[in-house]
Image (cartoon, rainbow over all chains, first blue to last red; front, side):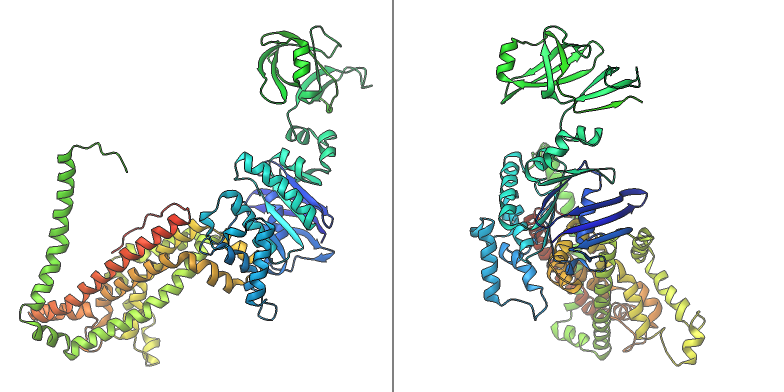
Length: 339
Length: 286
């Protein structure tokens, strides 16, 4: 089922959580709402689920106006950041809940409920925990049970609020890939909230970058990473270095000062200056652990630069800490005039 | 286990002081109540309890609790739900108002109702014209009891509901549960021990209330005397054995309350601990 929100506003007291937000999500898409805390991404998700009411604006599920519908009638699967499993119920009863509260005429029989719950437990690969209580599960297991519970009502839309937010790094990575495969298998329209750019870039078909209650950019992971629509998007999707240049060549306006934003891996390190944009720096820190070498450098003006290069390049340049080198931007990710 | 750094003599002294206070202020009076009640033999004890005036007082006390406790149960759940789960204006005012009966002297609580419903009171003439008797009758006793026990359930539930938060209810709603199903299947199981705890405290106070009820009851023997008032009258008549016999009933109520309270507290803590939440420090109102 597709989702469309149009010109949504939401204010909490004096805080404007959402400001004229419009968004379209196509059927079967896996979309990440990415932004820092306070950017309004969770509020948007809650408004779609009906847990929060927008001050104004419209919501359509597959073209139908959803505003008059209560949360319970929206048939939206929602997975909460802290899972919100019913702590006094077993895992089995948690998953069965959505089926048991159906009106009598639609309620499946006990046998059907049992089959459905076991089918879902199999889907999330946790068949052996049916009789346990949520407190007896690990974070990753709770997450998957919360997902199974949400799927029990066969939702047409799945909403996940920071689904991996409170898990440790290892489990996060695993579940991330698992969610991707899971979505490829089920094809439910899925919207998930995250503040972790790596997570969004790795999992989503489409990324919606939000900031201060507004959508900054919507696009594929490649798109938002390589063609950021604003400095905010650029900054949020990875480290970036700023070069100050008097760019007379590129801009006809003459000697207007410009800022160039360059990703750490888009810098050339050399012993002598390569262009007028080259900056002389001293290497202050070198991190060799990992597949790439991460270097911190400082210019005479005190600006900090981050450089990334392969281990091979690093060895070829014979660099060591405290070396004096020149940095030249290879590929400018974004540039703007200084105000 | 916490590390103990205090010298042994300090520990012994502190425990000693605590135990002496307990003995002096709780065990000793309790013993005196039961000794005085039984000092003329069990036959007299039973006879003074089966006296018609005593039976009427017991009946009235039970009836009052039977009405006041369910009322405050419903009010307490509603109020704590509203306070813990919603944001609205005047919320702090509501919290203050709920606590009001605890900070007002019981005599004042009683007087409020006399001023409202008494012959000279605001609603007095109207009530008289319609032949409704409130003051010096059952309605006033029940109203006053409801008033003084007003905070008991709500106060216990507000911290519990706040600790549990909203998420489980929201999850229930996204799964298609209606309001009643959400309350019955999700909220109630989570708050049941806190609720029971509040009900027991509420009941103890409802049955034991003296001051406020005394003001509105009129002390009509066999009609408007609750058990605490009955005890006072007997005592003032130098009928010590009967007074202490009746008092022993209230003392037993207190003991039962104490035992139930301990059991519930134990269950409640275990449940919260299992849920991985912090244990809420229970305030003791008894």
